[in-house]
Figure 1: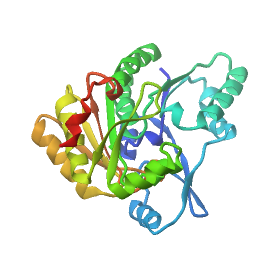
Figure 2 (figure 1 turned 180 degrees about the vertical axis):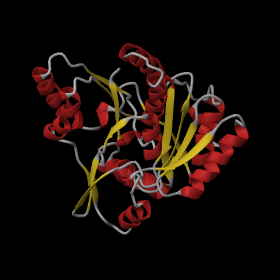
Figure 3 (figure 1 turned 30 degrees about the horizontal axis):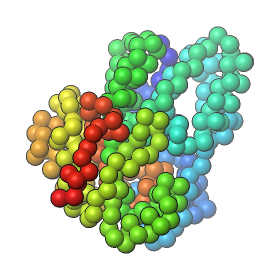
Figure 4 (figure 1 turned 60 degrees about the vertical axis):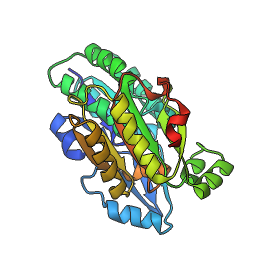
Length: 300
């Protein structure tokens, strides 16, 4: 059975990853001049990070280099172990070029070893939900082929919707034009985004006002969620806990059988979406980009 890896961009809590027996790769971020590696909340000072960023501190993220990946994986190959790595979306980072280079080199040195990569085409708990249930299957002794088959089906059912409070963060990340970022923020227009079939970001619809945004995020779970008594619903917030609590309550009112879990967004992902971002992750019949959603539904 392979060693199962994930990375900190799946945003499962550290104790959950430890319980599942997973290895995880910490992704880096730099706040002003200090570099950190996100530890899934084990020792992270979220209050300090959000306060710093809201007060104007600059935070950037960076990719791991091939040497870092080599250092992480080499010990397992040396012990004769295979690796199965469940990653966040390859469309969102250049770090996977480094991963490919490192694995290619390792495979040349250890030709008998197997390295399997599964691209969740999600990030945060959209990836985390896939990691968790793949890990539960892995703990039963499932083969790499069985894990891959499960993930290949499950990934098409994980639905993520999120809205950013300050659209300039999306502009800085190249996801939104400068004009849209400025006027959207001024006018209070909140594009609700999801992850498309390639793992990139797509705008599903636009809502004017924070309260409408929260109601419509809840509506997506209530109307589109399936098997909510089997798979958790995650409500994530980037330092806007009251809004997250309201969203969780609305979901629970509409779908009492759902187990709704709350979580704060970590520094790496929040560096790109910004404080005030609110999102929901759940299991649906299919990815949201495939869902036919009448735009007028969101104008009320």
